[in-house]
Structure formats: structure tokens, C-alpha cells
Image (cartoon, rainbow, N blue to C red; front, top):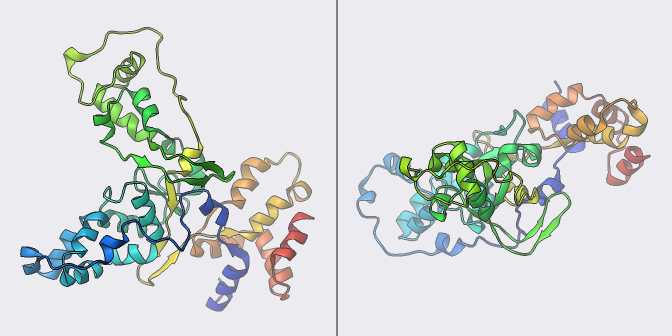
Length: 356
């Protein structure tokens, strides 16, 4: 393994952050502020009451269980509460390193959904919930970390409109309120940058299905109720079961829209707690080279779409990339033929050697 200065050079020259992936999900211009910024900054004169009598360690254990909306309200009580909340590690680090993720939660109506303790735990974990890869995104309906590949393909990350979920699983509004309902943010989503100019309510299809089975008692009863147009908000009782209906099941693809997946995610860095630095994930220039030179450098029988494209877009932590570099022939070639010879890999150089 290379020494520290050489490792830094490897990262800066042969690793890059995939900006297009960040643009495919919820993101904000840097000039904008949080919708709840006033609640976080204004002072007040109200008392903390008996909370002020508690030892700081116990008080922090209590505050960690609160969501960010509640912490913002508490911060407005007085100067003491503002200082106490501001020193809470979860509040401090999420506000410092995952500011845009908090903005996304606020803009979608989910700021009160997850506790500071839970979000901080996810901030300090780097694995995707759907696979073993580095995950650089937050899936808002469940608050789980995920990678871009799982956003695109994992069936557990399918997102549908709230009305579609109600029809698919026979759910009344009362039942839907048991899961996270996202109010979408206007913008361009997906790699194709499809424009969405109307705000809608969306939910995780998987989470809605779980509630549907719970409410109706079984998957069979849920499908039967959906076929009859019955929507329930409470757990089904035995004498409320609908009559059996033959060959009438609601179509599972009703209202499908894969772009909605991206409207339910936002970039979410990984925090190295001890070093107090973040890792947004990086891709490999060598794998990018392989993708653009695929027609020349790989045999016709090689499954380009399933192998090279996924490898090109695979995201590593910085530490993982240094290990990957040792085994990536194209990355080593670029290092030996360009970086060590001080030729560099500017965009114009890459345009020449990657695409010709």
C-alpha cells in the first residue's frame, strides 16, 4: 500500500465524485436556506423548566430521542437551551455535515419523522441497506442509507403515489398515515433529468404493502379488498372480511413511475467520527476508461451493459478505492502512463484517451 502523500495523489487524480448521481435526486442550490431556519436561530425567554436541573449527560440522552423539528423548537426557548441543543453531537454533526439532507427532510414534510439519534446512527454507517456497497444516499421513506444502483433497481425501493398505494393495498387515509408520506420537491430527477412541476404525495410501495397486510390480516384478504375497492383504516375484524371474488386482483404495476424513486432520495455523506471528516463516495477513472473503450478493448461476447456500466458507476469509500486501485488494471495504467509522468487527466486529456 502506498504512503499517505501518494494515497492523496491517487484519490485526487484517479477518483471522482459522480455529480450526475447527486443531480438525479433531491438537491438544493447552495444559496437557499432551510425552510425552518428561523426556528433554529431565533432566541426566546421561556424557561427549560425541570430539564435545566438534569445532569448534562442525562439531558443529552433525552434530547437525542427528539426529532429535528422538536429540537429546533426547543432551541428557541432561551439562550441556555440554544447552547445545550447546539452542543448535542447528533444535532451539531448532522447540521454541519448533512445540512442538505435536513433540508430535504424539511421540504418533503419528514423533518419530524426520525429522531436525531437515528439519523446520527445512519450518518455514521456507510453500507447500503440493499447490498454491501458504499451507500451515498438517504432513502427518505424509511430513513435508510442506499447506493445509486439500489435506487434504480432494488424492488424494496419502489415508490408510488399515495393514491396508487391506497388502491393497490386497500388503504384508507388513516392507514396511510402509519407510514412516511413524502410531499415531493419540484425539480428535475433521474439521470435523464425528467422535469416535475407539480408536487404530489408519494410513499414506499413496500412499506404500504406491509401496512396493507397488517390492516387486512393477510395478503390474500388485502388483494381481495383492493379488487372490491374496499379501503380500511383499522385492523380487519373477522366479521368484516369481504366476500371472495374470483380472478380479480389489482394490477401490481398500477401508476408505476420509476422517476419517483429519485424524488424520494437525497445525498447523504458518511461521517468518520474520530477524524471529523465526511466521505461522499468516489468512482474510478480506470473503470470509466473501460466503459468508453469497451468496443475496442473487450471481446464481443463480454456483457458490457451488465458489467462495465455497473463498474463505471460503482461508488467506493475513499479507503475502499485505495484497495480497488491496486487491482484495477486500467487505473494502474492511467497512474503509470499519465499521473507519474505528470501528464495529468484533465477533461481534455480524458476526452482524447477515453473516447478515441
